[in-house]
Structures are given as structure tokens and as C-alpha cells.
Length: 153
Image (cartoon, rainbow, N blue to C red; front, top):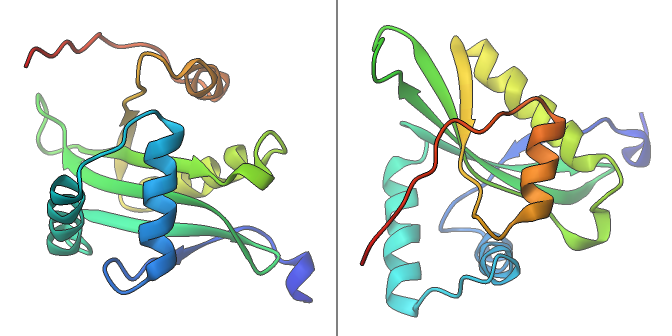
């Protein structure tokens, strides 16, 4: 099959060893209106490296030989029923040139299959309150609001 005809697939990210990952992560945060300090970013990526392959898994969404998005998945135990596994989408983005063309839905379906293969009975995620497009996207995929999380400095 020619690379341009390739179906979307997940490709593991080498966290901490892939300069494109770092640049894409920073761009993702800028898109969300969150620009972390260099110290916070360094600590965050160090934690990612520690957790990668144990409870957290980071993937490129690749289609037609192009990296079109990025997804970070986490495996958790359900808090009430710890014998049940829960999937958590920690970060999810489709890069600007490929947005609103169905790539996000395909990337989610791959993430969902990945979770199901690992016995997850549910999938959760967080959406920033000002991210209306994100909320509409996740609702279109069947996600419903569970609760509001408030924070105070």
C-alpha cells in the first residue's frame, strides 16, 4: 500500500528524544491559551518520561505518512471499582492543517480501540471551560459532562 493510501495508525512518541514532540506540545498549549513557564514545561516533560510506558502512553496519529495529531493516553483503575480499568485521554490535538476534516474522529477511534484492547470499561477526559470547539467535538463522540472541577490558587 502506498504511503498516501495508508490508514491512520498510532505511532509511539519517543518522549524526551523527539524535538518535534516538544514543539508540538508547546504549540498545543498556546492554542489552548496556556503558556507554561520553562520550569513547569521541564518538570512536565520529565514526569512524562518517568510515566511513559507504565501508566501513560504517547502517540502520534499518522496517516498517509504524515503526523496529523498527538494523543496521550493513561490507564487508571476506576476509583470506586478498582478491579475495572479506566482510560483517560490526557492530551489530544489534531494539528492545524488537518482540523475539521475527520482526522480527530479517526484518531479518537484508534485511542478508543487501544483502551478497549487493554480492558478499559470507560474513557474520561477533561476539557478547558473556554474550549467550546473541544466540548462540541467530544459531545459529538458520545461524551457527556460528568462534573465541573473547580480550582482555587
